[in-house]
Length: 242
Image (cartoon, rainbow, N blue to C red; front, top):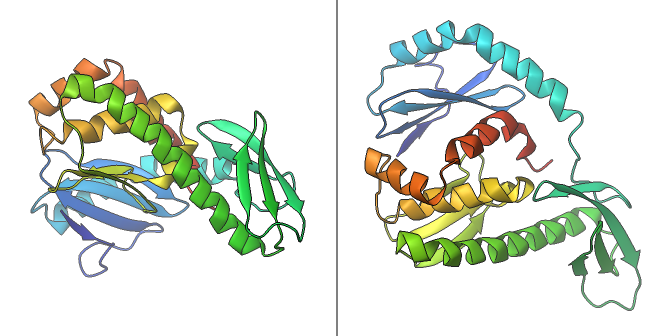
């Protein structure tokens, strides 16, 4: 896979930044990745001229959705480390409850029904944010491991390793070494969407492409997978760490 980040010598100047990912695919897909970032997934050897033409043709659609993105992002629960700030986890809002006491040698983080409780001896809020994100990664990994075991009985494959990463554009990936990688921000999505990402990447353990055989295997394990794809396209603005 080859990626270009809006090379000005290749891509015309727009009010938004254009990023491109080249891969073995047949069609061009456009998605909004930020307040001023447009991501294009394009077939290999797609010319800059064609990319420019597609952007110009979709310019009104792109600007409309960027404006919509900017309006919606204001209302998203931000990952602030203030007492009672809101944190989103698997499509549910939790309230942060910080308990400070010098007796705690290291931070302890626990989920309750409505809160994320942190016991800590530190007032270092940036450090606390990293601790909370690490907790998210651990909880997401635990959930994904369970879903991999569930779907392995049907897909008949199991990854060699599972990694939770911080990435800008990919929700998940499958390496040639049969390792599955998942973006930690998908922990903000509903469980059914996370399940789709698990099925998608596990299907790559058998088909390292997006052929009709690949999509048939996905559909067998998740008949409504297109609904989950639609959610990702419509709610990608939620999957950010502020």
